[in-house]
Length: 219
Image 1: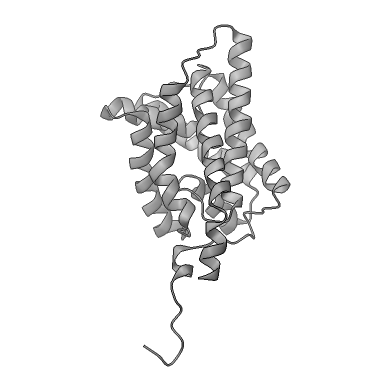
Image 2 (image 1 turned 90 degrees about the horizontal axis):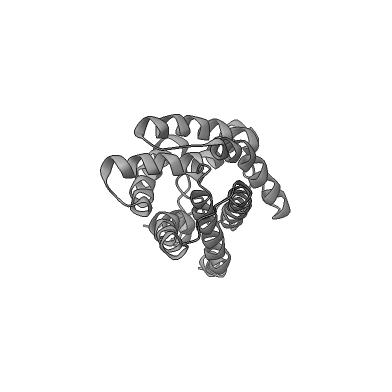
């Protein structure tokens, strides 16, 4: 129970991370220079299936979560579940709230840069809370842990693959997409260092850890 109490105290940090992440994603979308690879993938699915952008993020997140558990032994924590359930809703909220559309190239570049920094910080902040990684983030965190390869290399490799699939599904991309893929891994790793978090060695709390442990010799 002590572990659960301590982890519940981290929830404000977790939600702040989700808000920054969601806000940054919407800014990159608003820049009209190209979203990140996962954004393009979700956009392609949204177009194909006729489902809102935010809901696609939720539905596909559940699928990725199951696959990550099976193949990457992803640890399921509070953040993992909440990421699946609410990040898509927060993105939908900001997507409807923000009506600003940049006109000039300079404005678009500024918006995508601010979006990149914001979403990278939010991603690093919520993962560093050690309450579990979201389904998509769990992929690069899991592969980094398994392969011992830095996030700045693992994350772009995954995202270039996702980008190709997203484009084939009908998602649109621009030079901003390549910019996001190349730089986001470095930014996430930079923020990880600031937050004193190493995905290759740091452990994440699992939901199973909150269950009472059965002593040996008892039922």
